[in-house]
Structures are given as C-alpha cells and as structure tokens.
Amino acid sequence: MALPAEDLVGRADELGSLERLLGELDRGHPGAIELAGEPGIGKTRLLREVAARAEARGHIVLSGGASELEHDLPFSVFVDALEEYVAGLEPNRLAVLDDQVQAELAQVFPSLSALAGGGEVALQHERHRSHRAVRELLERLAAPTPLVLVLDDVHWADSASVELLGALLRRPPAAAVLIALAVRPRQTPERLSAPLERAHREGVLIRIELGALSPAEARAFLGEALDPAEAAALYEESRGNPFYLQQLARALDLTVGAASAAAELSSAIEVPSAVAAALTEDRVELVLARAGALAATGHFAESHEALLEAMAILPEQSIALRTTLTTACARVEHRLGQSSRSRSAPHSRRRAPGWSTASGNTSRPTRVS
Image 1 (cartoon, rainbow, N blue to C red):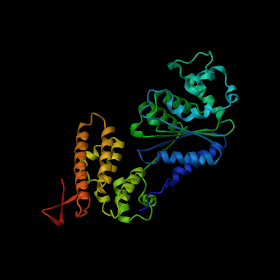
Image 2: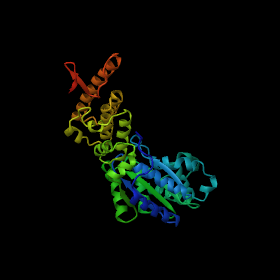
Image 3: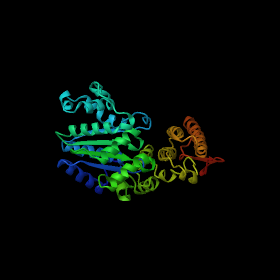
Image 4: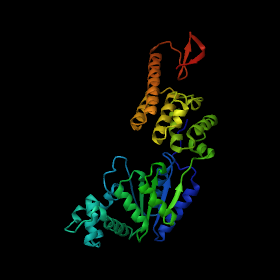
C-alpha cells in the first residue's frame, strides 16, 4: 500500500487567502494571519506552504516556534525566528537604528549583545521600548524586500513573546511584513487569545480555522492504491484529521493483507469507548490511536512504546486515564509475549492479531481478554 502523499490536499479556500495576503505584501502592505485548529489538522503543513510560496516570490522568510519547555525564556519565539538571521547581518544594516533601539535589541537577541553599549535598558514593566525596537528591526529587515515571519505553536509562547506579538498586531510594522502564526485554540491561554481576538475583530488579523478533510480529500490524501473499504474505515477512525489519518495509514501499511485492521483500531487494546472519549488531551488521543493501530496490525512492541509515550504526557491528576493506559499496557505486553512464543514455535499457525484458539479448535477463534 502506498503511504499518504506529502503534497497539500484540499485547502483551496485557505490557499486563496494566503495568495491574497502575499499579493498585498508584494504591494508593500503589512499583514497577519492566524491558522487555528486541533493537533494534526494541518497548521504546520500550511505554514510550510506559506513559506514556500513566499520564497518563490523572492521574499525573506524567517521561521520559529514556541516550545512547552521554554515558557521561562523571554522572547523565545522571536529569538528562534530571527536570531540566526540577524547574527549574519552586516553591521551597517543596523547602524541606522538609534542607540536606544540597538541597546534594547541587544537585550532580546543574544547575537546583538555587542550593541548594548551604555544605554539604559527597559524594565519588564516598560517592555514597550523593546516592542518598539523589534518593530523597527522588522521594518529595517523588510526595507529591501518583503519579510514573512512564520511562528508555529504560539499557544506555548512565553509571556514576553505574547506581549510582543500583541504589540505588533496593535501597531503593525510600517513595511511589508507578514506575520503568519499557528495556534491550538483549546490550548491558547487568555493572555494570547485576547490580543488575537482583538486584532481579528479590528480586521488586522485574518483567521483561518482549519477543519477536517472531506471523505474525497482524505481519499486523495491516502492514494488510489488503498482499498476503498480500508480508506473509509481509516477516515471514520481519524475523523478526517490529516496527521491522525497518516499515522493510521502508515501503521496499516506495516502488515500485508490487513484488510480488516482498520475496523479493529478502537478495540485492539481494549480501551473502553467512554474512557477514550474522555481523553481531552489531544496528544494523548493521537498517541493512543497510533497504539491501537499498531496493536491491530500485530506490532505489539511498537504499540507498547506508543502507550508508554501516552503515559508520559498524561497529566498526573488523570488517575482514571492512567489506570486505563496501565491496563492497556499490560494487555499489549501479554500479547507481545504470545506473539514471541508463536514465532518461536516451529509449526505454529499464524493467526490474526489479538485472536487465539480455544480447546485446539483452529476454526473458531475466541477473543483473548
């Protein structure tokens, strides 16, 4: 079975909005766009498309992102996007900025520390001076050619980055600068959602809420080589989420002739449906789905690793869910042991994953509990 295509599928309306923004950028107008949606829905893929199309137009594209582990690093999103580029600038590119602006930039970007001089640096409650300095830096960088700033996973951004983003949305750079960012609405804190909503309401920010692929788009994504029944089962299981769909298809591809595997994804590791529905942490849902797909296709070792990954990212207070995952781990370990014994037996009969025979009757399989 062919793996899902890496080409962008669907999103015609979204691509139209991106093209219009890039057209405005060519005419020297600043802009901002927010891609919102659940994990795996295609935000990062669409950001890559923005970057590719901007580069094809000759624009400068600088990309960065937030991390769950960098909440305490001030301006980390913007440092990630700009640091390497500004470090390679010729000194005269920044010499036109006044001393105070240079001193502020030296406090934001480590590579510009030599610009600190003896200027007084803004205190935390006076960060508007840092905001002005970064705005002037972006205007300077975009002076010769349009600049596209691509910021991923902004829902994890540190407070200084959120404040700076809000400032840039309230007063956009007076140059051809496009800010393209991606967020997960369910994980976006109020301190970020408020300025985004205000900018959207004022028409400064275009918001694109990414939804699931349609059945036809999912079919195109999976490729024509996949059996239609398997494709339909994968679509139903993934609910049209592209990343989810891709992971399930790859897991299914691990086993030849797994025509019925997709139908067993939910039950393969025997997680109660009510508990599965209660998994509000999106990453746990995706990892658990992959574990189910792997178990359904007989890859118990990989399924066990995925379950351990889900355990690792599950909040400590989720006692019921942790208990359920622990039980699922035990079941997969049991089946892993059965699989190992089956492979070691020279004349053992190969059977479908998760099934065993009772009383030596190989024609009537009985579900292993």
